[in-house]
Length: 116
Image (cartoon, rainbow, N blue to C red; front, side, top):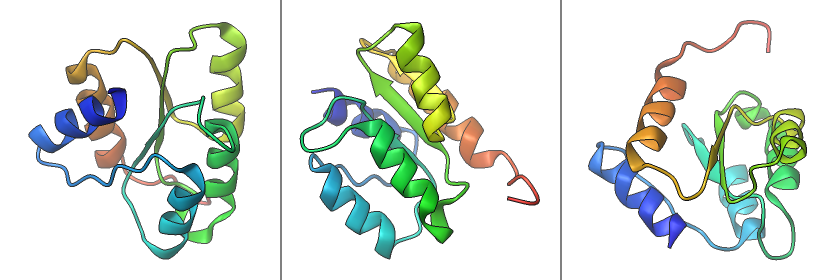
């Protein structure tokens, strides 16, 4: 439901979305495509969002791609792990769609950091 709600909110703001349930498929799609933003949960089958983010950061084309964690975990350790794995933003469920859209647009419009 959250994945669907996030996609609907981002599409309503004029963004194209790809919504995938399988994190391993997501990594394959990321390896083959340049995307402007990744929104991921922490809790997923097979692997978690932290590992997905770490693997994403190893891909040359996604070293600086913004990553938003959208998750039900609100504790400090989870937030810290998201940042340490390479995440840019952290939103706790239930979420306000407008918050996701504002954070997504802010990250997409932010100029890339030089030297990364």
